Image 1 (cartoon, rainbow, N blue to C red):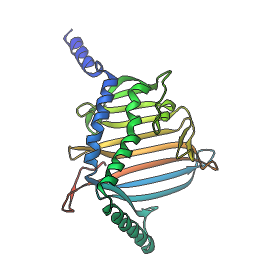
Image 2 (image 1 turned 60 degrees about the vertical axis):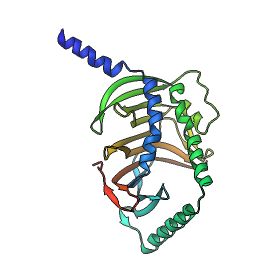
Image 3 (image 1 turned 90 degrees about the vertical axis):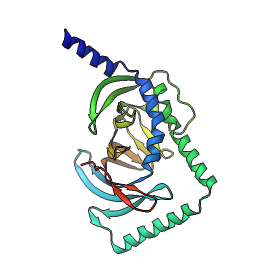
Image 4 (image 1 turned 135 degrees about the vertical axis):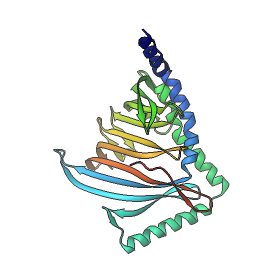
Amino acid sequence: MRRLLLFAAIWGAAYGQDAAEIVRKSLDRDQVNFERLKNYTYQERIEERELDAKGQVRKTTVEVYDILILAGRPHKRLISRDDKPLSPREESREREKMDAEAAKRKKETAADRSKQEKDRELERRYVREIPNAFELKIVGVDQISGRPAWRIEATPRKGYKPPSLPRANLLTKVRGKFWVDQKEFQWVKAEVEAVEALSFGLGLFRIAPGGAINFEQTRVNDEVWLPAHASIRADARVAFLKTMRGDYNFTYKDYRKFQAESKFVPGEEKK
């Protein structure tokens, strides 16, 4: 009987939560994590595998970028291609691009920066529609980055009408599940499947039904969640012309905290 009561207590603590309220709280916490992310640099490795009609790998390309901080915002700088260093000419070109971007950002006014923040907020307002767009249900608790996280299942809510916001219509075309850290209410993992075609960039890039988008984050320096891995599996049509079938994998590592005096502090790294 004692074991039964203990099990009931654990079950209640884990599943007696309101999934929609957890998601709302996690969306409120997202801004805090975003501000902390601005203080970190890291590397991004993008591996693209193009598949043929039988699912066999036809071509693989790899690019590695340094994600640097310029005027308080990230900047991607290509540092290698297909696991080989850039040629001197390419390296010079990347340096010129970075210097030009740094000079551009240095000239930005307070009004320019305010507009950027407003644009970002408008771009992300659709995310706050998630509790309205989906039926949310806690279906488990898993360990993510060594910490317990609620596993929440999201299925499209029948009759939901998205507001007139950028990307809001995408919410009616996907289903999936995601994980929210129990202590800090941060999104730490997600697995999303397209149930209808997804269009991006005025329809120039489309992902067919069945395509999947996954991502996972890791805890760094006990203060921020940073990207660890992401992947896209899709049959996509680019610019209405080229059909691409492939896998795209993004791996992140070498997190370093950027200080005002331009020093870097090593952070935890996803192995």
